[in-house]
Image (cartoon, rainbow, N blue to C red):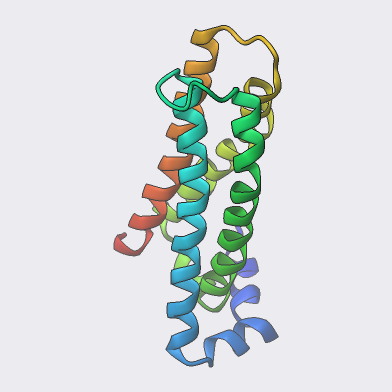
Length: 156
């Protein structure tokens, strides 16, 4: 269904340009992708542990979420930019990959959960402890699933 779109992406001007670049660009993109993932996951992990009542209990959840939000955004920006640099010149390789599609389905769920559930529990004045714990487990589970799926895309 989307095969022609993936073909057009790979054969576009930017796809051709990126595909002709030195492999050093790909290596730098990989490093930036990993750095973005670390920024995102570490920030979410710190906040998630606080939501579960297991760390940094001297800080309010709202203050911690506010402090980590710039790292989350920076991590997401690095992931998007580097992910596009990696994806565009090789789009046809990703199209038949089931793990790639799983990753993007989980990514969509993680983004929805982040912009709804995560925002709710980190901005609310009073959230029941069990609601906060379940929200943290859902959010961390989704984002770490995205990371693990991304790691295994190249093996399938």
